[in-house]
Image 1: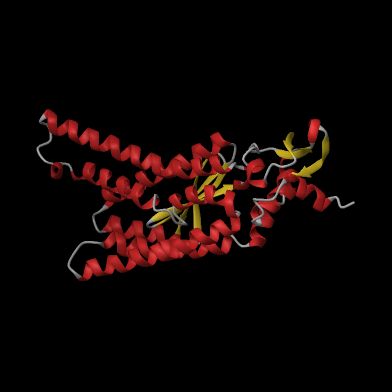
Image 2 (image 1 turned 120 degrees about the vertical axis):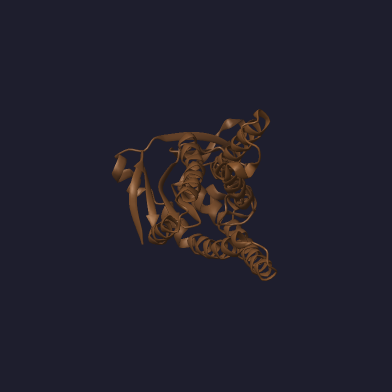
Length: 305
């Protein structure tokens, strides 16, 4: 259950009920400032995804904040080229790393100026560095549902297809989450303060399981349906691109532009157009794992003599 608390452009910001409960507990326990540092860092991380998606031509429709992280819903992420999809995923960790670097530089500057004797003199600044460094390191683990897994999937999908790439990355996510969980509880049993690992592990497992379900073929086919978008906007920009008949599906997908519907002209020798392939058919083949197929093969399948 989530409650919408704000809107940034077309992006809805929602708090999950567990986040609200955690906020109340922390504030009454006297950790209000620590909580604000965490929330501010998390918001800066998610803004990276939102701005990158806007630059690439897609749109983050909703950000749902949980007690230990957030999930972003990207409208029509399949319109992004694999490169753009990876850039959107990396933008969040980049923002976290940037904020950690700025806070660390400020901390060093205060120490050198003599205004700050030790890091513990200003614990919130030290916390800002640790929180954002943690966001960066954890999110760059190459597995779903983490951003690092989305970056890897954007490249892997060109070789094995989106569905198979998602399956592989969620499998790694379940394995990584299990390992992190075990390490966290072993550390706690040994007297170490590995609470972050003990909490992050189960969250990664939970997120990986959700990602695996959402990558099912019926979900992929659902997002390929542009009828809702057409009803809302009343028109969709259309672009034609010409490709050689021996170009692979993986190669052509990288040429698609965000926020446009494409008609692919399949050209034979001497630039003669053999026929047309719709973007929908191209993406169905791509997500189905036929990334190695030639454009001539796709056209012939749909236009048998």
